[in-house]
Length: 305
Ligand code: HEC
Ligand code: HEC
Image 1 (tube, rainbow, N blue to C red):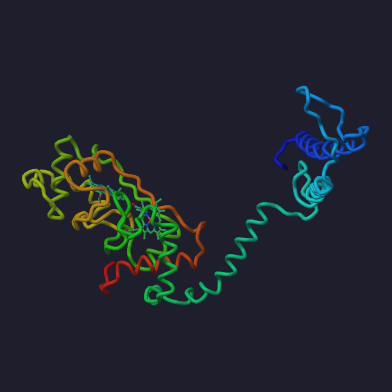
Image 2: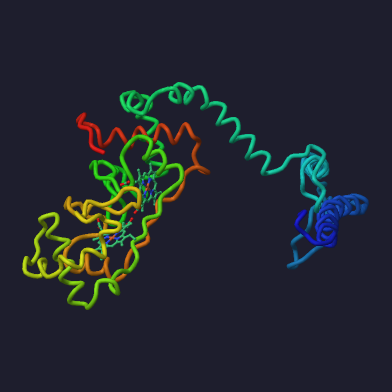
């Protein structure tokens, strides 16, 4: 209500609300005053459809009282809570305040639980069954819609269990990814590569890097064009985690493989985004999630970063 530029709507709403309740009470009062002269057979004298008569029974008392109590409750409620235009109510209750109280209470309830984890290293937390159970919950609620409930990802959404990292798989890097999000940008490169044939040949060269099915003649023709890609993917094609440029030699494809997929990457580029979680999750929740994610790619004890 406080968003209105002037008082008109506030007064309008107040008048309709109060007018409604007062109108109801007035109606009750006026009808109660009107006495129908009773007749011998206790009818009002009103006859219709030839022989239907209206009995003159009074309204039940409980109904009258319910009506009055409801009206009194209405006035009391409107005095205590916001309801009359921009009047805030005597209790000072707001929807936002109620939400914030609940959130603060939930945080306070969870704090002792998370306090245990904040002093633990990522590696230790990954071995703690309680931390991993919480991590799994958090993952299902916040991450599974993109990375899949088994965290194996899908097209354009990276697999988090395979030890292949766009941005780095150390505990610190994973935590950084979750906290601040990541944007992976590959610019359209066709102009730097040359003709459509050059692009196609280069695609075969890229496929040859991982030993994926390719045409070796086209690959050898495309090899020299890879210099346009080296700045990000490295001369050897092994990628650069600082830029989020994937390793092209490992036969793990975020956006699909084959001539058509790679040609499309070179022609159109890609803008891929992992949303930042720092405003959604607390630092402790992010720490637990980072251990959960780190743990998934270190299940067999192998150190793969
Ligand atoms: C809206 C979809 C979306 C949601 C939700 C999401 N992610 Fe991501 N995530 C992505 C995308 C897309 C990327 C790849 C970014 C890129 O291409 O650089 C990514 C990348 C990552 C990476 C980096 C992987 C690597 O190879 O370096 C990690 C770790 C990660 N996400 C963890 C999480 C966690 C944990 C959550 C839950 C809190 C989460 N993500 C929620 C879409 C999402
Ligand atoms: C400015 C840096 C940059 C340059 C230059 C660049 N790339 Fe990329 N490339 C990226 C990034 C970043 C990604 C990951 C996009 C994402 O996060 O989804 C990517 C992704 C790819 C992929 C998809 C890999 C997969 O797993 O699906 C291919 C293929 C690729 N690049 C090929 C090339 C080729 C070929 C060239 C040279 C013509 C090239 N790139 C030049 C930054 C670059």
